[in-house]
Image: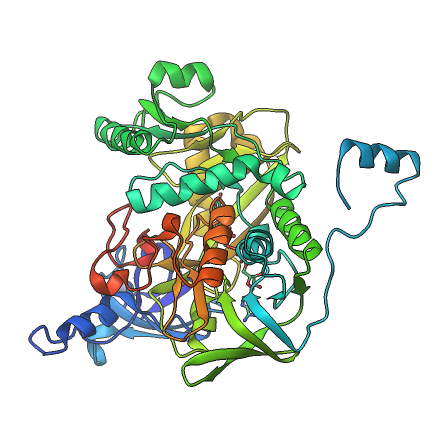
Length: 88
Length: 416
Ligand SMILES: Cc1cc2nc3c(=O)[nH]c(=O)nc-3n(C[C@H](O)[C@H](O)[C@H](O)COP(=O)(O)OP(=O)(O)OC[C@H]3O[C@@H](n4cnc5c(N)ncnc54)[C@H](O)[C@@H]3O)c2cc1C
Ligand SMILES: [Zn+2]
């Protein structure tokens, strides 16, 4: 599996670490439903069989966080963009 | 048909024409008392204990592929109960006790072999961690022996004791741990369940649930709708997908782990050995193949195959630990998809849908759990309350902050 880093080009998966699903922004700790929101944020996953948005870190490269769209059935990578460019 | 020395002798004398199929490949009926989804080790064991221990025989096990096509036929067959946390030790030790009497119980040769499981340690810090785990085990009545370097050397003289980076200082041994024949475990439970009236239905994928007023009344399948009063979900690796059909999100990610088997060689590895400083563990099958594996590939996958960097990592670990295997050829390697849970421990519990029960999150350690998971899941299905040995495996423990995190890795499934 190779990930096309927008900065470094296609690089071997062993240069990256993944944080798993790009679950969206951290909830507001001051919100009244913060406990429930943090539970979902920390623990629950959609875990789809198919295209999935994930955060990957190019640890042995440019050290950027990437948002990668990858098909979990085939490992095929549809796109990879710098995470800071989209909504986090 | 009862298997015994006598039946073997009788069939040997009559040209082996008297053997009957081990289990019945059933057609689905329209309705059952209980449906179990997934004919892996867990689903089959659950059906077996439902019939045998609870007298519930109007049961179907629905399998999307063929019996044993999932992880039950893909694992590296290690059984052990060397856990640290009380909630886990009690459960895995119950499983070990069931393994010890399994073959007599279901009258089938599952080749349970208590050859010992040895976890090597390579530093003083790691020794302390292992000593603590061994003490926790002994406090729960589980056997554990902390070995020093010389004791390990006497057992396994071929290991690379003086590796410059990771010298072997000793190991934690569970003598009662070992291996079992994975396929035979599936066949034995299938036979025991089938003989008691359970329908095992292959090529029957569950594609939806029939839920009325918050209560399960049946399932939709590729072979039509089948009604049931209760449904148990036991689909290792696919738990999130199937639970999503009932509107649930689980604290689980699906990951691939690979395993390898070498060409057959003479008896070499007497027990199960795990490298404490890298991703490698090994045993030897009765046929002579070295059976080994390592860590997850590390990213979510439903592909049932892994990538080459992990292959290299596992092989490097193996050669670092026992250089003598450097020229052994790998015959086959494969991958299986597992539920990696958010705290590394499993779930056996009810769900918000009445009559729908969940058995999931077994990570890469659910083979050793097969007997006890089947036992406890059957108990939950039949009695509507958790079995005491699985009392810690509740679904709401994440929201309560009562996680069972053996490794202390936090809520990141790929690190457990
Ligand atoms: C490479 C590898 C090595 C391992 N090594 C060990 C080890 O040494 N020791 C250990 O304890 N554990 C080990 N494990 C883990 C262990 O194999 C699993 O935790 C355990 O087998 C899972 O339970 P099961 O047997 O019921 O799963 P499975 O055999 O996977 O059963 C689940 C079944 O559900 C079916 N299914 C899925 N979706 C549907 C649907 N919608 N409808 C109908 N059926 C469906 C699947 O086809 C499958 O047959 C290993 C796993 C792997 C992959
Ligand atoms: Zn990069």
